[in-house]
Image 1: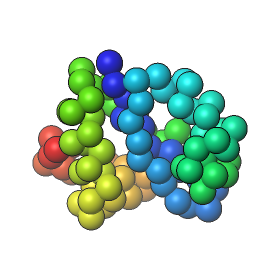
Image 2: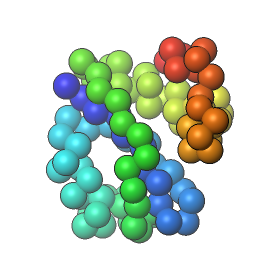
Image 3: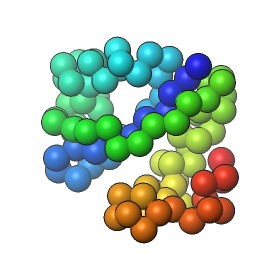
Image 4: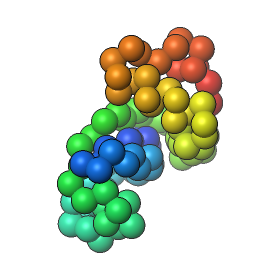
Length: 90
């Protein structure tokens, strides 16, 4: 299983990533040994999804880093909920 995750830093920045071991990856980010962890500082886990393989998780990661994906995450954060069509979009 591969986990796609979205982190939200105190500054408002987000980091989208994928990992085969989310707990280890979050530890690395908190320790500041990753670029994402260094840029975010303190953060919280905003969102995560599980995928059967790396390729599927990577497609979703690409979507969340696109304009439509960033909008989807904005709507998720504001509590208005992402539109149903965007949930299915890769």
